[in-house]
Length: 257
Image (tube, rainbow, N blue to C red; front, top):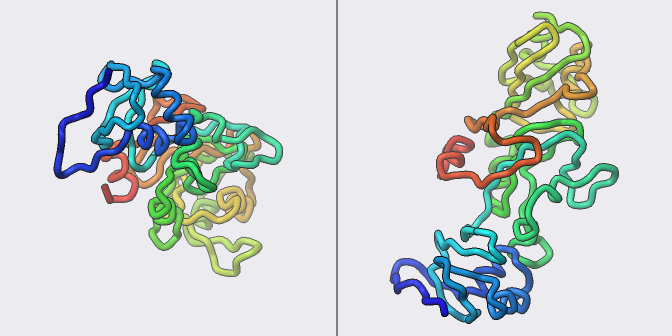
């Protein structure tokens, strides 16, 4: 037996099967079946009635012993490892989406189910990647109009000199755009390494900018995204790992909660 939460006139309630459905645990019928078979617990109590109402916001529950929390929208960070494509239908390498639990990949149901990557990183690029099922958030973070800075740690194939740094800051011309592309910031951090900040995201932009100044990004381990906005990739989030973004994280990224 499972008791519903107390009434709250300020927060809407949802049936338990609708909560599971919205969080990606399958069709409504599958979610109802999980509940009826005793696989779902709320406040450590098994709940077998799919129609039981709960206040969804902040609800803690478990499915087959795995703890979950209800989120109306998903905002995640992923430490992308090398050798993964940022595509639902990868051509050569495995998809980054295989690194996420099934329910997160299926949130909401329908044709546009699951989270989507906010921009893309090349298969050999590592580092901080954001994912969400909030279309407005994805657009705001991806649009060059909002100038969200993204910081990359670059290892070049050849020695970097001050002339190359100044060219990156003053602007280089890429093949498909006659308008110069400039780095928002560029600091040499070693003989062959740079910290490069961009506020837009053109196709292979970092690699093409480095090539435009007469150098080349190292093929293996040459490009790593360490920061978006003021959000740093946590040192304890290992390659392939992911976590939910906190409210403070969202403010760090975009200045909006």
